[in-house]
Length: 384
Ligand SMILES: Nc1ncnc2c1ncn2[C@@H]1O[C@H](COP(=O)(O)OP(=O)(O)OP(=O)(O)O)[C@@H](O)[C@H]1O
Image (cartoon, rainbow, N blue to C red):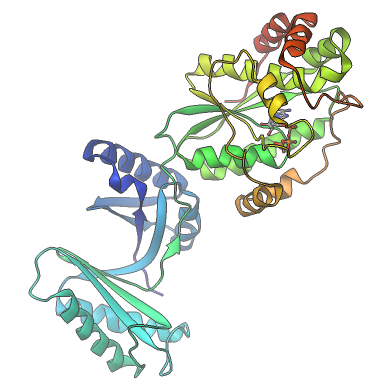
């Protein structure tokens, strides 16, 4: 096909007030430009993209949050002559690509914005005739095999036949920052992705549990950030690693063995909160899902979050493993997360699954949690 632009549509942004809408649109355009090499125009709720490399643009637009759907299109002038000539060529291309022949039931859908000396219906009927001059295909407006769209906006007309589904959501970077606790597992990258899809910029915090974990866990964390970054070209993920082995050792040495995982999670939230305050983030994100593993009970969730004032968002809380895995596969993190990282040897034989808040508070005192958190926080490593 001889396309010369991509028309991108957005959903939720369109219902915002004019001021917010304009800000979101500008950010969306910035994010598109950061994702692939292109020129972009905005006009009346549509975004017109002229990519340097068309195939690359069509592929990568699917990674830009805020884009609800998009269509590779051919543009012309909003006149009978312009539309006739361009549509005739367009149908010729459709024939070469085996997308239409004499047996293909087709429809023309025409939409118009602006003043013209024809109505949308008149133009649609006219375009039907233009198509049939090229190929004698039957018109079927109720159940077509192929719909050709003719979209007219003031002096311009656009012809396309595909509406590709975009990722939806809100433009990345329009909804503030979050610190996402990112492990090497399946869940947390999906949680971070969902928050990115809602427009939040992500700071990824990994707790490096070595010597209780292997270097593989850190390697997988790096690979996951790289994969998530393909969706974050406009506001790349900031990467932070906290060396957490000493904290875990203190928990094991000084508090009841059973409490190790509860203290581990609780410490992570506290460190994430400190980091969020330092970097101007407003929430913490994790990959918890109720009951998914024995430790993710409601009482453990309550106890591990004790003393953290910042909201802890768990976008997967009501999803089951299969649903989470489906998303992980779609976004390309599953192939990385499924690699065995050797697990964590700090996990006790019988970890606490019904944590009692009072006992957790005592365990925190036993291990001097505040002090251990401070020590770990001082040694956070940044990678940008
Ligand atoms: N080493 C780590 N560094 C940073 N965050 C972590 C780490 N381990 C766990 N988390 C956070 O705690 C959440 C719950 O972890 P847990 O190990 O209980 O469950 P999980 O189902 O194995 O999660 P995941 O698949 O994300 O590893 C994770 O989703 C993640 O947000």
